[in-house]
Length: 74
Image (cartoon, rainbow, N blue to C red; front, side):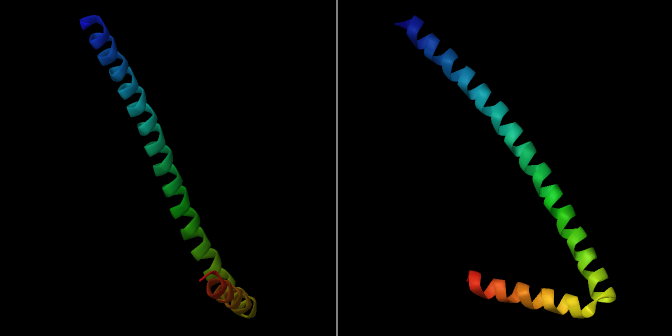
């Protein structure tokens, strides 16, 4: 009986170790994606400011389209 108990403990330890490894990989990937999203969001803000300065009429059309989409998604 002790053999099976020890084997179960070893199996659980192996599973726990594999879970921790996968969890670390997922957390790392999540962090990378958050950083990329933040960078893209900042770049989008910069580009919108440039668009607002260079082509204000197009910026307004774009802004109205975004507002319309926000209303339809609610």
